[in-house]
Amino acid sequence: MSRVPATMLRLTAAVWLLTSTASAKPPDFEQTTHVAGKAPVSLGGAWFLYAQAEFPGGKSRALAPELLTVSRKSDHDVALHLLDVQLPKSIDGPYKAANRKPQAWQPSPEDLALLRKEWSKLPPATNKDLHASDVVYDRVEFTLASPDKYAEVFTAADAGVDEALKGSLFALQVVERYRPQPMPPGEQIAQVMERKSIYVVRSSSDSMLEGQQFTGYVAAGPGVPIPIALNGPFKLYRLAKGGAAPAAPAAKPARRRPARRG
Image: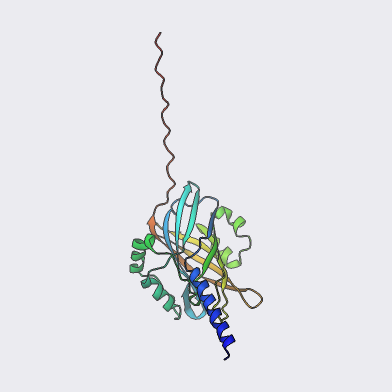
């Protein structure tokens, strides 16, 4: 190999490495919440989102687990927030390893106990790995809908979503848009551009919400985007309670003027 191509190759690799290092700290991203109807007032706190994709032959796979917080803004309004943090290695390792097997990973009672203890202390998710399907968030949009608003929110839902919505308690739609990551030299990787999930809550307790999820991914393909649809059950495990709207400050009593003496 001549010196010029070798030098250019080293420069290309150096630029990619420098760009990857510069983006090691995850950038801030916009998050919005829209509430259609009356929001369940018992959602305040921290949650661990676990979802499965089911395939023919009894096979399944866990989707990327996420941590969410919910805070109450008022009696009928809430704000959701996705935490872009590193999961404990004792959870992240088994989750990724199980995705190469026919049965999905599921969180154990020990995993949930650890998350309840450590969720607020987890470090930001730095050093995103494109090969591990890590994503860099650009924007996240939450829509929380009560049954009386389903027709307004889910206007283009397919038959499976429509059937799941019947008799459900409420539904949460999450649209995640991602930023493109630097491509390693000489590689072609179809990066995910968007994930849109609908979580239909069919049962609720103080510690868990569960139901059916419908998730669609859009990946960058050769010329045209590649859509991927994955459906299955989901569970939202409550890690902590809280997030109530702050009480309004008490009104100060009016100061009485002393009576004038004649």
